[in-house]
Amino acid sequence: DTAVSQTPKYLVTQMGNDKSIKCEQNLGHDTMYWYKQDSKKFLKIMFSYNNKELIINETVPNRFSPKSPDKAHLNLHINSLELGDSAVYFCASSQMGTMGSEKLFFGSGTQLSVL
Amino acid sequence: GQSLEQPSEVTAVEGAIVQINCTYQTSGFYGLSWYQQHDGGAPTFLSYNALDGLEETGRFSSFLSRSDSYGYLLLQELQMKDSASYFCAVKAAGNKLTFGGGTRVLVKP
View (tube, rainbow over the protein chains, first blue to last red):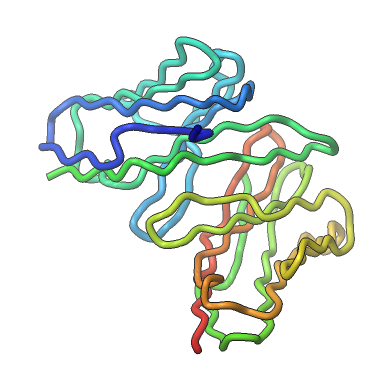
């Protein structure tokens, strides 16, 4: 009964390959995100979807393409992987509360290592 | 854009009190959140402050001063399991949550 689940947990691949990370949430939330956490633990938002619509698209290379088939799923496809893409990628979901509050629920993360 | 500053690391002994400060610069402001992340784990929500003042949740409290663009997380009666990274995060214009660089708290016996 995991709230936000993402797969795979570990992804080791060669430069130039294409890979996907899947994310699903069973919380009934409207909004889903992808965050990237680098080796210095800095968490940076990449994308946000609300009810399948893209609402935030940070300065992310075009090689990264999110897809949301429905509001419970947000997948991330990465083309032509580069060494600098190595990081932990977190999926998250949220529901808006009162006074602008927003509590994010994170998945367990996908450790991507590009060799 | 948004920027948040918090100390990189704090060390304390079990039973002590630790205060993690966070100063922010944003265009627009809705509130300040705090998240905890253990090594190898996912960030988990701790607290949210939209108004000035102190919010207490068990051993953890969070404070906000909107006029000073400042907040802090107070960890009391520190336990070994509190060793983790703590992130402040600001909800601002553009409706996105921007995280600080994180403060690594190391609790020693």
